[in-house]
Length: 121
Image (cartoon, rainbow, N blue to C red; front, side, top):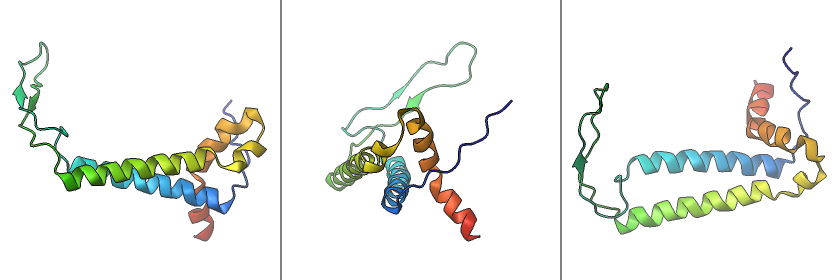
């Protein structure tokens, strides 16, 4: 028999905001990273041999490496992700929870913004 979801935790608004900011920043960083060359340093590309029982052939074009502005931007994103992760992880609200529900609370926190959107609709 499937478990019933636990009652929502009363997350403080600053914790909810930090979690949403973390999520949004991660999405932005991933989108930006898709536009970057495959290697941060200039590297030659390659073609690999066809693998047995597969039609896949690995191929990479030469990578020009990151330009200074790209390196600065990806570094900024990573620093912001680290800061927001620490803010969410070390929030004082976590200390108020019983040890057995911390993981459940963190999983619910990741979706807390969805509950707010549903209530507003």
